[in-house]
Amino acid sequence: MPSASRRSLRFPSPPLPPEGFRYFPGALDEGEQRRLLGEVLARVEQAGWFQPTMPRSGRPLSVRMCNLGPLGWVSDRDGYRYQPHHPVTGAAWPDMPPALVRLWERFTGWPDPPQCCLVNFYRPGARMGLHRDEDEEARDAPILSISLGDAAVFVIGGRERRGPTCRLRLSSGDVLVLAGEARHAYHGIDRIVAGTSDLLPEGGRINLTLRRVTHR
Ligand code: MD6
Ligand code: FE
Image 1 (cartoon, rainbow, N blue to C red):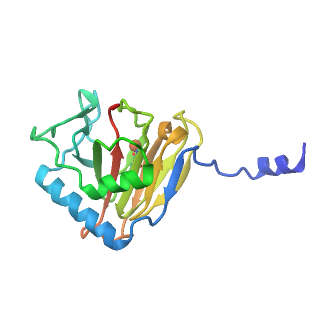
Image 2 (cartoon, helix red, strand yellow):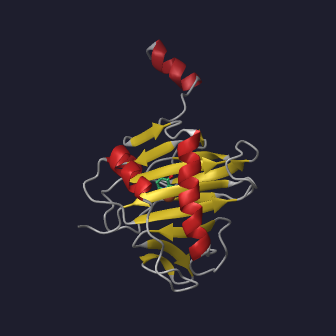
Image 3 (tube, rainbow, N blue to C red):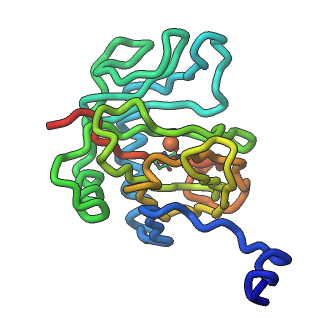
């Protein structure tokens, strides 16, 4: 056996993120983060957070959610889906801030505009189990993710739930694009690293994911 491969057996390198994983650390400066957060929270406070629950079991997820744009992702006893209205109030989701549409164009270059901005709110202790985003019809379109507030440990593997994973700390202002193979990979949030940002006055983390849901 050549010595290089013997060495890699003794010191296995951590798995690399899948093809199509694009990470832009510090893409938004503090002013941009504050402006974006203000635009998002003004809309979320008007619409209200909801508490998603697991299909079948009805067990609550630890993350609170809201959506902006024509379609919103929801989860309850009936399953996962996109719908045009808030699951509690029945009101249409607030509009998507134009700044988010510009970030979508700049970071994804996708020809169709985003239809959903899912807003996830994590208090310290909240997490998001390993999952794949597969409720969209347009699963070929990338997903753009923006992190605001406390840092989080992001985990990503491959198409198989039990395969090897790699982890990465997402900090406030970081942008991530899942395209290509990475778009179909299992991923989740292991934990929030409390006290790492003062963007949110009471701490915690907000993650925005922009999605194209339907084909044109
Ligand atoms: C989060 N992110 O960062 C969870 N999904 O709070 C996701 O689940 C995610 O970052 C699809 C594409 C990018 C993501
Ligand atoms: Fe996801």
